[in-house]
Length: 195
Image (cartoon, rainbow, N blue to C red; front, side):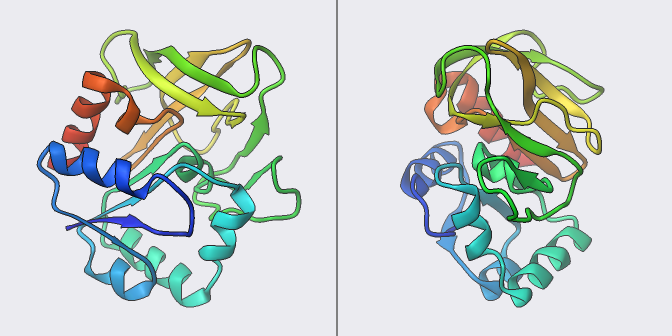
């Protein structure tokens, strides 16, 4: 069962539907019990960093997330869902992220902000998220310019180069929205469902 974790923000239905279309058995839920029952976890990607972290701040939830990581449960963080895996975000000064990886999400300072629309993601690292430059749909103002504690699996250019995807064993993160990215997004979600 794939848990789409509900931390009180939008797009739960669209990501759930996209996962179901590629064969995923999906449940939307929240709290430690839902995490204990999950075979895979998706952190969806719309909302503010501070709101997401408020929803995840319960020590019992944090412990359940750590237990999932110890069990090597696959995680997929989408947009904001990827950013909360890091230490902090310029969007919410003083709010601490999950801290699974070192790094801070910064506001885009070049190009049009927010970055909305189709942009190419280029493969990076030893386990790239794509094998060749591929268009995905983006909708964000904050991003990781680098991710020193985790290998970048894809990069994008929008006024500046930023991390478009990470992958480290069972943990995946994408700055773009695969559920809005047509065939390429469906292929990525299918790969996650099958991992």
